[in-house]
Image (cartoon, rainbow, N blue to C red):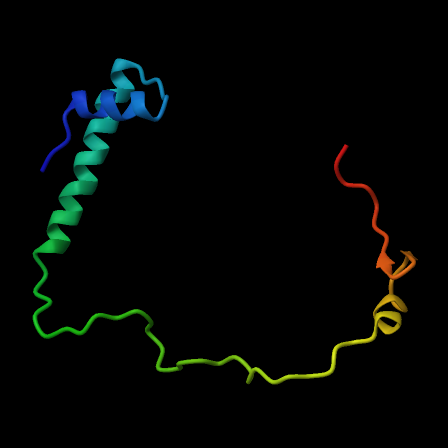
Amino acid sequence: MSVTIDDVTYIAELARLRFSDDEALKMTDELNTILHYVDTLNEVDTEGVLPLSNIHDQKNVLRADEEHEPIANAAALSNAPDSQDRFFRVPKVLG
């Protein structure tokens, strides 16, 4: 598979990009180089190789999901720099 300058122009139009003629030629060469590399990878013999989703043997390194009593509202607000009623007060972010 190879990319033509018409393909690059079409893709650029879809992406709302503008290329000069020289840039379009360069992009065509670069895309063809990438596709050639992918074709090279497709030639690798993977017969008998199992699909791999993770290189580590570890399955789940997270802590166990255990139920705990929720923190009391007053305790949570005790460390807050500013609060009002039972809510945290933070500076206005959006105009």
